[in-house]
Amino acid sequence: MGVPPWTRTYDGGGNGSMAKRYGDWRSIAQYAPRDIKLYVDESSDWVIDIWWDGRSAAYRLRTDWRSHGNGRDIQFAEALAIEVGLLHVFATGLRSAALIVYTDNTGVPFGVPRGRMRNEAATIVIERIHDLQVRHDVVVHTRRVASADNPADEPSRPFPQSYFPLALPRSSFPTRSHPRTDIGKDKQHVKKARIPERSHSSRPSLAALRAARQKTMKIQAASAPSAASNRRRSTPQPLTVARSSLRPDFLAHQRLSSWRPVTALQGTHLSFEEVASVSAAMADSYSEDTLKSYGSGLARWHQWCDHPGVPEQLRCPAPAELLKSFILQHTGHFSSDTIGTWLSGLRAWHRIWNQSWPAGNMRRTELIRYAALHTPSTSRNPARPAVTLEWLSAILSVVKLNSPGNVAAAAAASVALWGLLRLGETKCLPKNFDQRKNISRTGVTFASAVSS
Image (tube, rainbow, N blue to C red):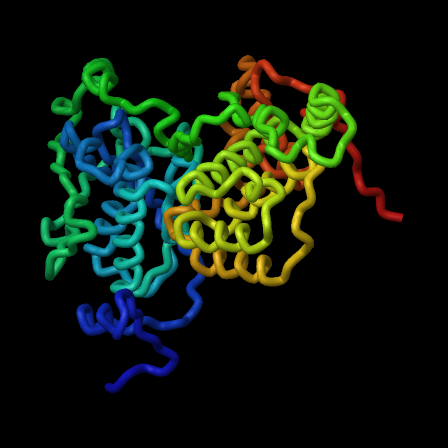
């Protein structure tokens, strides 16, 4: 027959390794999304549930599934539910289509089309899902559905009259023809749960199912991670600076005005107290967040100068050549944005203490560009999903109007979408509300476009 026209191969590992391994050709035809009524969910923190057009299946995870590395959490389990659901579909021979899969998770519907998530274990599962799409010439469209409308959501619900068990051959579970060292710790540990018979007499009662679910939740509650474990976070490394009377022990946001250069009183007729008061006033012109980041950059500068023993007279005012060496030696270890922030803090320190800053230099600009090209991948966070109407609708669908926290979160999300703001611009610390900077109800106006 030969190769059909308008086809392509998928090279998943370079040099055609995926094409050689599976021998698959994939059509570039555009398939219309097809709703096959496939719903998936991870329920009660221990069971993966599949509901496909009136048929159901449940797979019990190992009790220690969270402790198998790669930061497994609820996103991993929800992505795994999509993979197992697709294995059920592909076991029937379906291929060459665009399929819609429903889940009530908020992050996974964005992660599957992007091919990655913040959670490493979930990303590995998503890679396998993309593997399946290539092998079966299928495009998966993930859609979020409210938990109340997800038939796969609650194993404690009574089985519908049209219930049929789903059967999945063991050969359908993901396997590898050769070991992969990068994902060797992420093998699936799934055990198929016993499926009740269709007869009503053998069907467990609703009360029994709820009791079993509550018992399991109590057992697992001790090992459940906190909400903060699923957020982006970094652990700052302490900056140790050599002790000096010029640099007393102050917090980061106090350093610009409290750490004085040795040349601070040169060329002035003012007393030290007068110079310090002017410097403190200039430092107060910056926001506290800016002072924190600039203060950290200033500490990084002195830490770097301490190592080779740079004299105080060269730390401020700093010569251009010394600044270039500072940039170059941190390139490849920190992002260019971080290094640029350090330089901005160092420049602000010079201005606050009325010291000359080297004029603009193209060589310094080019070194920052060089640092950008060599920014390590560990210094970059993956982009967050876009703020969309679907995202806002998903939030508003679960908001509890009797909860002030829920209402505030929904309001912040709405303002971020319609005001074209970053999410950080819509929130504030609980005890640090500032009406000059933070959005309040009185600061929001509603307008409508009137066509002429």
